[in-house]
Amino acid sequence: MNFELMASMMCADYGFLNKEVKELEKAGIDSFHIDIMDGRYVPNFAMSLNDLKCIAASTKKPMDVHLMIEHPSNNIHIFLENLRKGDTVYIHPEAEYHPSTTLQKIINAGMIPGIAINPGTSIETVTEMLRIVDKVLVMSVNPGNAGQMYLPYVGNKIDRLLDLRKESGFEIFWDGACSADKITEYAPKGVAGFVLGTTLLFGQELSYKETIKKIRNLEFDN
Figure 1 (cartoon, rainbow, N blue to C red):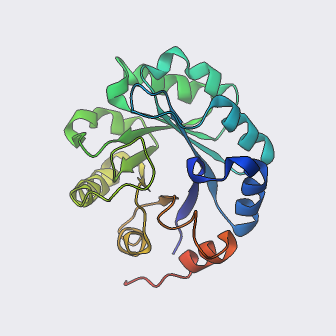
Figure 2: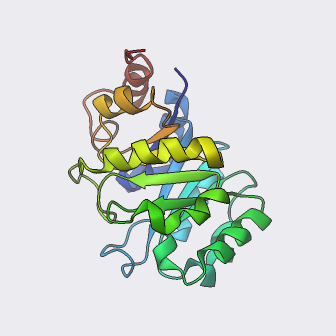
Figure 3: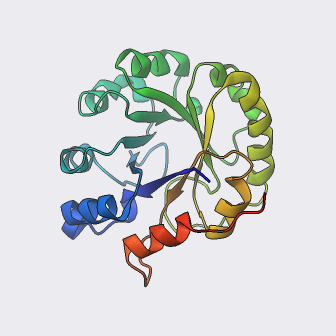
């Protein structure tokens, strides 16, 4: 079964960031998920523009940039200038006055436009944007910190989005508390990729290569 695996780099060892990127790349990760936080939209500061630059310079794998910042349109050019065409940029619709304008800037720069949906964000408030984005990142935890507990009601939201996907053509990605059982349940349903953090990838006894191989070899009910 084909599905993407993205490494949540806010969980990596920052003392050896270049080494982490190389090891994850050799282990078979598909892309690098970069969480940018401004301490305002979410109550935390995470990765910086310099972290993004470092990772982008260390690999040819795609960047998967998640902007958890207020009014991203004001500064989105700074991020777009440091990405390659075909990289993905997610914004949170409620963080922007006119999210469709910001998404158009992402499209114009040759990037893949996406929106991130918080657990408390209703699908009805983003329905129109589903027609113009290529990716929807569903947060299964409240954004801002790693290691949080999965919120069970998010599963119903994903099921509804899977139905809407048939009409609008976007792909769905899982972010937060991603365990093996979530992958075995939702990959067969049509979730296209999973962001891996401390639950499954980082801080584990197995190496990155062994962990990713184990995930690829999960058994699925068809």
